[in-house]
Image 1 (cartoon, one colour):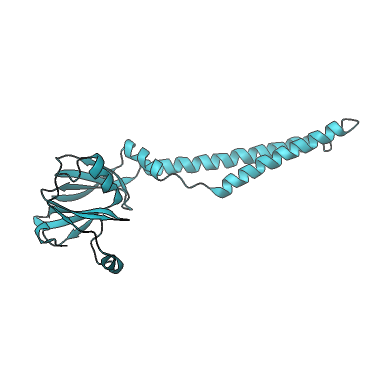
Image 2: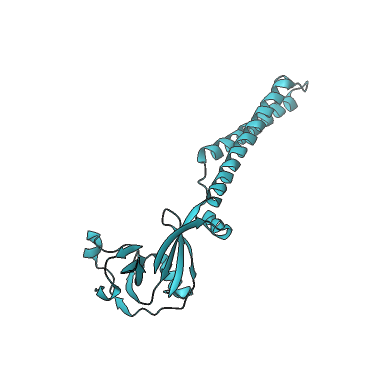
Length: 212
């Protein structure tokens, strides 16, 4: 069985995705904030030094001017910090409201393809889609970690990913499924043509028709 459905992201998945995709740092805002802090500090230091060095202890500018400039600088810094914090909050909210795509897979037959340097191991899984026998192909470096740390391939499992097909996690619901065959990795000529199955492809053949 192969079924794809959508649901709201869970809190745990949202936390994981936020770590995977942190909000992009606004370099301009951060640079401008730092610049204002430095300029404000230099300004206050300068007028203070001039007052200290003046024999009559006079301020080099009217006091109200100094206070006004200081208030403008502090206000600008607070405003920029608020914008940066709001961007982070909006990023967190967008993740919290996100819908994820879930691939629910049940299978009884599996074939593994040797790991490619960049793609990792490939897996052919026997599935039924609308009553028709098909072969699901999975290939992603994450699957290599699952094969080591979990019962993958599995007779029943779910893959959770974003609409951009970025994998967030998985849940294994069945038992470990030993691959029946191992095929060699795709050769350079095949990779150069691009004529090979990609992660998530449904092949219009049964798993028993899969050859090297």
